[in-house]
Length: 365
Image (cartoon, rainbow, N blue to C red):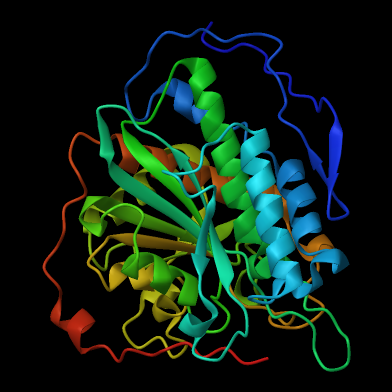
């Protein structure tokens, strides 16, 4: 049998800024280490099942806790969240790229007076093998709206504690691939960006100061608000919005659809890809800064809800079983893009895409 029992348990707990962080689990039974290079092998589909909704919930609860004070860009709560992310990757033996020590610091003056302090993107890195110079960037913003004048905390569980926790979980499970003797051919950069709520600043800074050359970035997968069920889907909750997947490379959309049909079974909703989408969702999250540079993108999203940008966006309202399935689809798509023989093909821009009104997202509290 290719599968063996993986038993993970916490060796101890440590405390950092009043946040308890479980240290790296250990493997009690080693799995067969035969090197499997097929990008969508049986083992990878089984590995995707290791994504755990309870682990995601635990991390969303921490990220949206009162102690992080709404994670406003440049403020203490955001910096605590950055340290929490750094410690998580250290404890799971997931490296920092190059010599950054996990942080890409953004100076305060870059934020155009929207933050009085510097802030940090948080980066972790899984190096590939024979195509390691090519990079798949997986991103989610971890900042939120802080505390209002009434002292109410904007917890930001769905926005975007959900996407942040999913990145953490995908990275953890990807690390387990090493136990199977499997590594991605292309490198994978996990990019937790700051400053999204005040104007997509963290991702903008990254593409202007890339750790790896943008010419070597083959795709961006963005996960933002992935934990809820919106009003449109209350009677059919097994869905996810996938936005922008065919804007630059139709091949990316085909990959996502094929993997979903064969292994996950979500309903893929393309509503926000409509040319005349009044909300302009395609332009409203961090993938757009990569798309502007001609990099294929896909944005996983579960839609808006009444708690959006309210203090009531709290962790217990998220559907973690559904987040497992959505995360599994993202994981498989990331793996396939990282292991294809050739880079994603780039399509010539369509007239509709060129003519569409570029709506900018100015979020307000």
